[in-house]
Image (tube, rainbow, N blue to C red; front, side, top):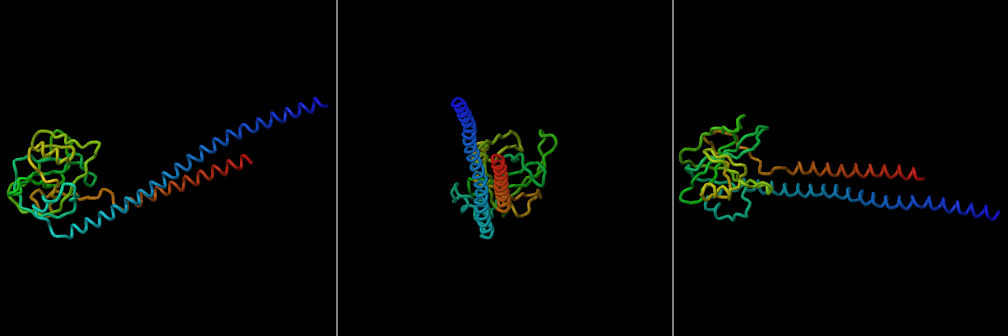
Length: 262
């Protein structure tokens, strides 16, 4: 009888040990899954709030652009007096210019209304200043043969221009000019600092997009803010929706798991 009781106790102890082992493993797995769940949910929510902050920045930037458009045009000396650290996009400029011997510049890989092409720029002299000004002639579609650049009629005489200024942001991963020889001269990035060295001519750190009529009559794309505040709000809603869906999914998984264990 004592022997049977001992065997029973041993069996029970063995079963208890076997039952406890999975619980320890389940506890470790549970802790890991909880940490991952909280981390992923936090990241999704944080991305949503980041998009909201970007929307606020874009809204403030749009207000600033509107105020600049409503203000009086700058003179060229006023423009040159502004520091290069100042964002100049949106200011208006009125200036008398004349053509230079510099080649016509074609900024590659531009898209307008779903068409890929070039943004055509001309270097213009503003007397009596040594610093020249880039004037946008407009957008021209690219041809099938990339070896043949489109022909654009440049400004051939002195003219009075009024328009708005912009500065294109550079991609830190690819900001080199990659200028090709010839006239017109194709470039890959509007790096004005590098373009000055290429042309050996001082340039103002902006481009003038004329609102007055030009002989070229090309389209002038205007998109100073790549993504509007409205789009950032839409992206924020998507991130928050993903966070909610993830939370519901993980809650469903945990409920199923608890029911299975019980």
